[in-house]
Image (cartoon, rainbow, N blue to C red):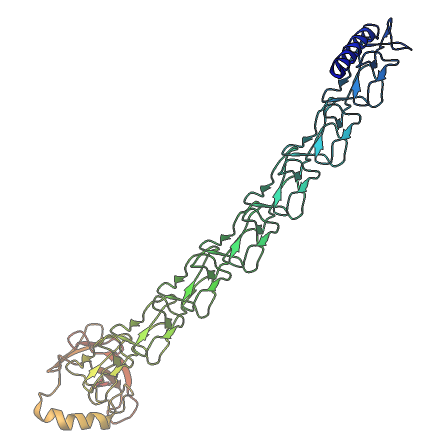
Amino acid sequence: MKNKYVFGVLALTSISIHQALATLCPPGYYSSSGSTPGVPAPPGYYVAVSGATSPTPASPGYFVATNAAVGQTPAPAGTYCPIAGMTTNLPCPAGYYAPAASATITPAPPGFYAPAGSTTATPAGLGTYTPISGMAATIQAVPGYFVSASASSSMTPAAAGTFVAVSGSFAAQNAPAGSYCPLQGMRGSLASPAGYYAPGGGATIMPAAAGYYAPANSAAATPAGLGTYTPIAGMAAAIPAAPGYFVSSQGSSSMTPANPGTFVASAGAVTAQSAAGGMYCPMAGMQAEIASPAGYYAPAGSATITPAPAGYYTTPGSASATPAGQGTYTPIAGMSQAIPAAPGYFVNALGSSSMTPAPAGFFVSGSGQALAQPAPAGRYAPIPGMQGTIVPGDANGDGIVSQGELNAVLTNYWDSSAWVTLTNAVKLSNGTWQFGLTNATAWDFSVLVSSNLTGTNWSYLGVANPAYTFVDTNGVGGQRFYRLRWP
C-alpha cells in the first residue's frame, strides 16, 4: 500500500508540472506573471529561461542585437561593450585593444601600438618605436637614431663614430674612411679636414704626423714623397725641399743640406750634385757652385780650392793646375799665369818654378826663351845670365874699346894674327880720299880723322864699309890723318 502511494504521488506531481509548464512564457519572452502570453525580450536584453517575469540586460562585454534573444553575445575580439544592456558592440578605438567579451579597452603599452579594432597590441617593428601608451601607429626612428629591436619604446642615438642617414633605420653605420662622427645622434659623417685623417668608424680625427700629410677626406696620412718634407704635424701638403737642400727618402720631416763640395740648384731635389771640375762649394746648403779663382784649382766635388803650386798656374775655373811652359816659370804658389823668362835667362823644361841664367859663353837676347845661344865668333859672354855678347876688348862693357883695352887685346891677339893694313889709298877726282883694309873681314872698324897726327882731337867719320872701303867726303885741301878704332 505504501509503495503504491508513493508511486501515485509521483505520478500526480509529474502531471502537475507538465501542465504548469505549458502555461509559462518561453525563453526569450517574459511577462509579469511569467505565464503566457509574454512579450519578447527587447534588444539589449535576453530571457534564458521559461516563465521569466523580466528580461536580463546583456552583461558588460556582451550585447543582444535582436528581440526575443535567449542569450547574450560576447563582444568579438577587437570590440567591447562597456555597459550592461547594449544592443551592439563598439569597435575598439585606435590605440587600444580588446580581447573577446571585453567590457573595457586596454591602451597599447609603450613599445606597442594598436590600430582601430585591434584584438591585441602589436609590438613596434624594427626601425620604429612607440614612446607612450595608447598609440595607434609606430613612429619611425628619425635620422641620427635607430631602433634595433621590436617592441621598443625609444630610439637609440647613433654612437659617436657612426651615423644614421635615413628614417626608420634599425642600425647605425660606421663613418666611412676619410670621415668621422664626433657626436652621438649624427645623421651624416663629416669629412676629415685637410691636415687630418680618419680611418673610418671613428669619433675623432688624427693629425698627419711630421713627415706625412693629409689632403681633405683622407683615410690615412700619406708619407711625404722624395724631394719633399713636412716639418710639423697636421700638414695638408708636403713642402718641396728648398734650393741648397734635398730629401732622399719618403716620410721625411726635414730636409738635408747639400754637403760641402755639392750643391742643389732647384727646389724639390732628391740628391745633391757634386761641384764640377773647376768649381767648388765651400759650405753646406749651397744652391750654386763657385768658380775657382785665378791661381787656384778645384777638382770635381771640391769643398776647397788649392793654389797652383810653384811651377804651375791656373786660370779662373780650372779643375787642375797647368805646368808653366818652356820659356816661362812660376816662382810661387797661386799664380794665375806663367812669367816669361827674362833676357839672359831661359827655361827649357815644363813646370819650372825658376829660370836658369845663360851660362858663361852663352846669352839670351829676349824674354821667354827655352834655350841659351852660344856667343858667335868674334864675340863672347864672360859671365852667366848675359842677354847679349860682348865684343872682345870692351872689358868694362861700356860699348867702347879704349886704347888700354885695345892694347890688351892686341897684346894677346895680334902677335899671332895678320896685321890690319890700309891699302889702295886713292884721291878721287872730287878731292876726296878712298882706302881699303886688309885682313879684317870679320870686324867693323870705326874710322877717325884728324889734321894733327900727334893731337888728341880725332873726329869720328863712320864705319868702314863695305869691304872696309871708306870715302872721306870732307877730305878736300889740307893735311889729314886717318886711323882705325875697334869697334
